[in-house]
Length: 500
Image (cartoon, rainbow, N blue to C red; front, side, top):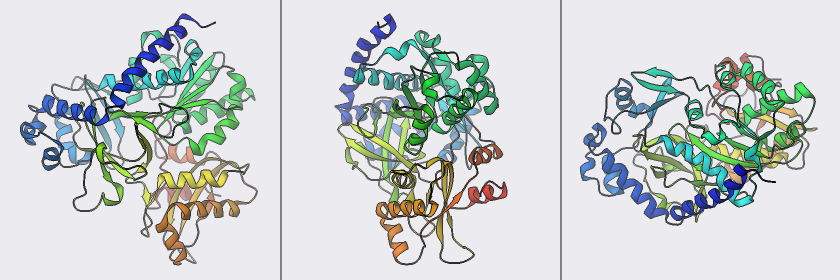
């Protein structure tokens, strides 16, 4: 028997589904409207005046007046907003700053405005409603739900609240879900990640958990602690747990490990949220890719990743994208980010409707020898190599070895196994074969005897968590880069004695 809440969820899901179809079926017109509204709303801001928004009538005008910027390049404007000035990047002042740890610039302050905040909340809600509409499954709304997230405690900077995005969003959980949400506020405010996860284990063990959500690597830590505490599979502890919601990294390398920890298969929904905007979510269980949010106050541009570092790379809109091409995604938003490079690369899996996968980071690649290997390729390679094997991988990262003590250079794979394969070198050969198949540059370098096949280095159990802890990035929204074009991570792993 469905509860009233579960019964009401289905017709509500149908209404939302229909409203989404309207814009998804008119993508170019939808994006044009977003673009025009952004320009007209910001015409009298400092940024709008500096870039002559009054004479921007189309995308071409915009390209000619507004260069692509990353955070460093936009920082002079952001600094003025942080200092308390109004009408700089967007009208008025932001509601919040999402504070993120930048790799080059220390802390980043990403503005969230009255106009942009609701889009973060609606996209997360709509992802669940699209799942209910597709599957007819709404029983989980009666159980307890957890999102492993940053602390909701916010600081103040010149009258504007700031904190981690997940902590800010925690203040917007709708009233009808307040009683369902875990953990308690007290536990959620614990800063130390390991202490927090231990407290979450104690709080959730007696509950009827139906949805578990978070970045896979940190949810894995929670699952492992549940198993240590009880000796049971997660699916036996939480009999009604049937939906895993995740974002931040590709789930596929974790899937086998998760199914082993849970003890059965559960449905999953992939999200693509960031402090700069909620860009996409999985709208179909059996379609590859996530539905790009074209009606959320975000105007998208794309630059081919291969051309990105050339002198004048071409910026295109969704009207001209092609399936399977690696693009750097550029955004302009109601939070006042203009032609902003968030650093992610995406590939389209469909243009009817527009669906994307995150293929990596424009700065996270290996091209020490001209091979242009990206995150998606290394993830797919390890995934294919594990098919038919009983080995389980907890985490991995890849770095170039440019000057080995003997022999040709190679890619070094640092892998932490939950369950080691019988034959490590056979697994390494399979990974290498997949990478050669996917990446013609890499194949040419192997065949041309510029590189030797990859080498696999084992990382001790818990080694990557120890590494993240050592750099102050354990838990929350922090993610281990899948690959680097240098050996900073590799050297740190060795310094800490985390490799075998």
